[in-house]
Image (tube, rainbow, N blue to C red; front, side, top):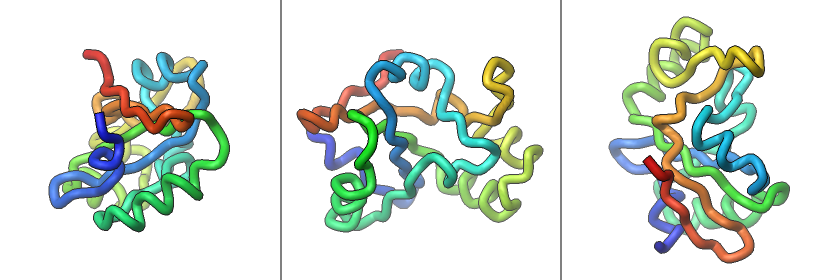
Length: 127
C-alpha cells in the first residue's frame, strides 16, 4: 500500500505521525499514543500538501524505525486544540487516561496504521 496517501491531513481529518520502534507497535495499536495531555508533545502534525508532508516524514522522524499514523476528525482536533488540551477536553474528545502509564493517551480508534521506515510500507491497523 502506498504510504504517501496516509501521511497528509485532509479536509475531514488532521493527520499526525508518531515515531516509535517496531517492538512497541502492538502496544501503540491497542492502547493509543501516550501524549502527556498534549498530543503535540509526541506527535507531528502533517500538512495537506504532499511535498511538505513528505519532508516532515523524511526529516522529522529521525528516531525510531516506524511512524504511527494517527487521524483525528478535524472538528474534534480543533475543539481540543482550542481548549489547550485541558484534561476534560482531551478526555471527552480524543484521549483517555492510561491507567498503567499514569498519563493521557490518544484513543486507539484514531490510530490507523504504521509505516515501516526501512521499506516505506504502510501497514493498516488490524481490527
